[in-house]
Length: 116
Image (tube, rainbow, N blue to C red; front, side):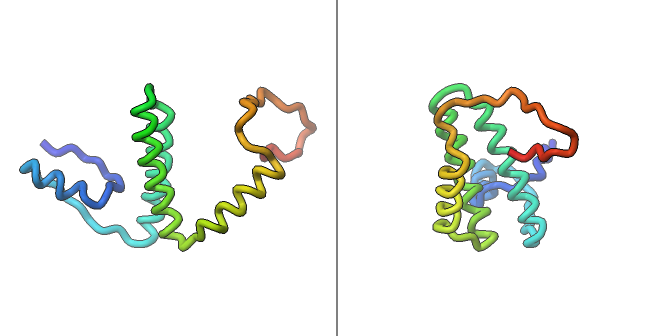
């Protein structure tokens, strides 16, 4: 029986599958397909963080999410210093997420921007 996953996996997963005496089919993605798969993986891992029910699961899922973020940074040739600089700028201008503020609604006129 074949179970189709059709998703980006960590580099050693095929070897692990083979050591379990199972067969798997893989392929190497083009740069463009890799970019798309990385973004999909970010969403997948973020959903797993959202669904984590205890500290251990949350730690595991955040580690996975962090690994994917690192892969995105490498793939796009981004600079960690640049990212941290923008992060600090946004923290200064827009704040962080420390005060637990949950925005319920904003009243506005038609045509105003909804970007927050």
